Image 1 (cartoon, rainbow, N blue to C red):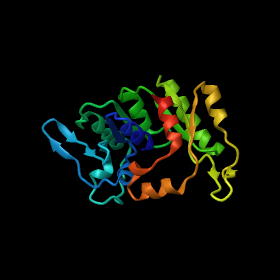
Image 2 (cartoon, helix red, strand yellow):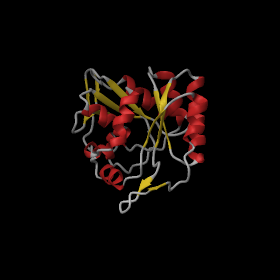
Image 3 (spheres, one colour):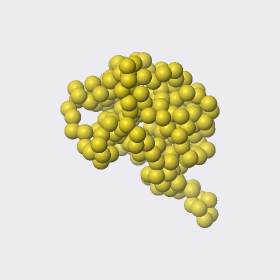
Image 4 (cartoon, rainbow, N blue to C red):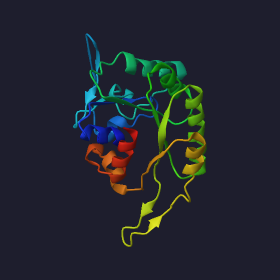
Length: 219
């Protein structure tokens, strides 16, 4: 979400395909409740405040808390429809938000969409790193390039003294990046403002300095 926002702030035409069918979060982050409209040339994505084009299963549900209880083939079919049946128009970048792991959705996206690159997101715990390493191995087997790795919830900064606190212990980012020979794109600190703005549907108002560097490296 934040990467899409940073790209839009730089004047790029950006789309966000929420491929996390059973756990969609993109519409809530952007404060979107409008339903997509079907037209003669396809389904029109919903526009955010900054003009991002967004498509998510949650935009099609009567209630955002409704559960999507589908098996793999239906989930994969929905992702393909979001790619093929949505009229995205002319975009500079289409970002696809994937669920973690190596199940149906990542497999469908990596095999069916023309992927230019993958940004892996991890956190300091080695448990999270193990899941990300599996995803990285999957991407390599399917010949999808990895642009780099972002470490989320990397650390916290004490608001009183400025001390850096590694709440989740030491980072294991090098154990991911070095074997893959991919760069560290950035480390995102824990910031209550980020969580608050996302909960309020105002992710486009969120300013995170680390994302400027991450966006530079991705570009």
